[in-house]
Image (tube, rainbow, N blue to C red; front, side, top):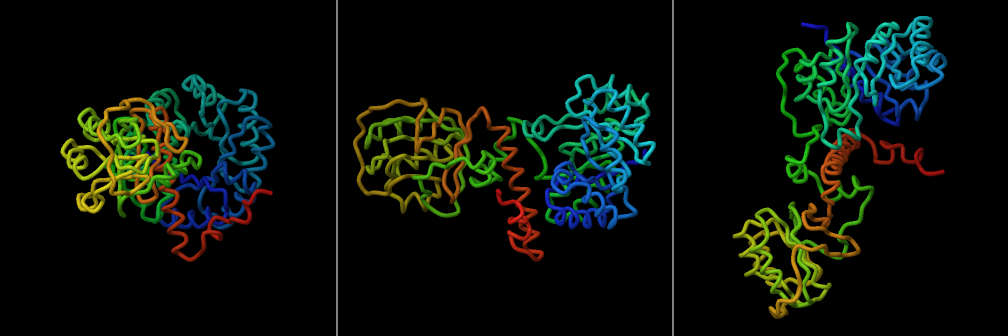
Length: 429
């Protein structure tokens, strides 16, 4: 079997957190430690020095992402203790050559990262001729969030060069086998280890997969395309999605009818006259199983939804209802456990007059809801995920969930939120 190397990317902004994670990763069997670009930008060369001092038997990779002034940056990293310096293949060829020469002079090997290089096979051949030690293929995180993770470029480069090929971006215990089979020998893993509650265990699992080439299924650290988006949305919370959408507002005036509620579905929209429940009832028959009815009743306190409509919605297989208006028969609906979010609870119902329209955009709490948008509700309320952004921000919401899992564990291990995140350090000056 080829000599496979597990490189753990410490993409933190706080050095203490990076060192704690590195301790766990090394205990779990990590071969190389990468001082990630965010950590270098945050702490500088001291991050390399501290890791080299503590883990003197582990090769340290400095992910400098050098684009210019190559000799200076390679010298800085090498003198700080880096064994390997990562530069960008998108840099001018003279910069790459200068980095390789500097690496030889200062005793550091050079890894060339093909991030955003389009003619990567041609460039990989050229940097091999220049004397680069490693070539790295990189799936950028923003591309991962679109569900685009493929190892075809690894296969193309591995068959074209003789230097070791590294792969970074979205690797986990499930898909790392595909990366190895494509030809990668240096597996750069970040989130699947650094966001894990137990990084020792996570590292050991990945090392075991590298040894056996038998993947271990994971529910976390995986990014999905449109076909599996509902699986992700059922795992994440309204708060996770709001955070992913840059702290996007929720439908702030609507509240869940009961606790421990969860609702996920595509919006089937209804606009009705205050107190007119005809269109909402008609919409039950028109919507598809799994849809969420989003009803704008003008914010009226008169009920346009009740027990009988709920029975009908359950029979149709709807996922829930969101009402900018009133709901009644709440005791019965709670027993049925059908997700309902509404502005008012009342005993007064309106009349079925038939005013309004269905399957049109509606606006609730200044938030526009288009037919087919994703609607997610839980005890914190309701958030709307626009269909055009759904894949990206569902994946980003999962990233938020994963990061919080790690922070929660660090707090439980002995710390406060302010201490773990070094809050005072990062307050805006």
